Image 1 (cartoon, rainbow, N blue to C red):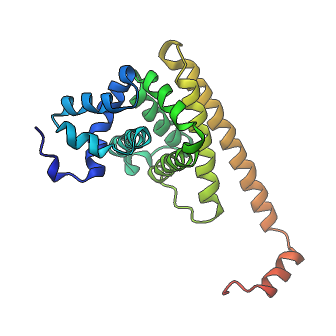
Image 2 (cartoon, rainbow, N blue to C red):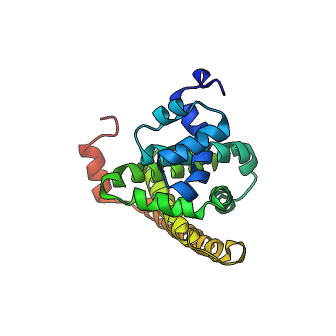
Length: 220
């Protein structure tokens, strides 16, 4: 048996999660999948069941966390920095898709669980966390409103791409990759136009902005 005593519960969940996902193809996101993962990884069944005693969403969250970690190891910021921003985001999303290849049934089952009303809040947080992880690896350092819009936009693109991926039977997931490319291209065009408008706006004097600054000084 693996000495799980040396791992935190979060570390144990991440260790087991890929094996749980593989078993979920046949057993669903439940205790049978956890037992199968424990056997595969040589972890005490009782300890594994305790680690996932909060149920399916805990298993799915750990699966996503394991993909986040694998992505960070495979595509460090220093390596991505050599690429244009569009290619950085594309590579990060494509890595995540490759990690899911062959686990489409587990993904479909996970999506059904995440779509339940009681899980929508947690699902949104998971999507945000994955988008944040991708943007940080891509080198984003925005701390203004762009920080939030970038992550919300990427979370939406990623969720939509996963929906296509889960049911894509085309050769090499060609339909999914084409869908992803179109979505990223659309966002890049939007960001370019937005940047042009913001720069143009900054070049013009605004009495309203001036009055606002007089009334609410930046130091407040």
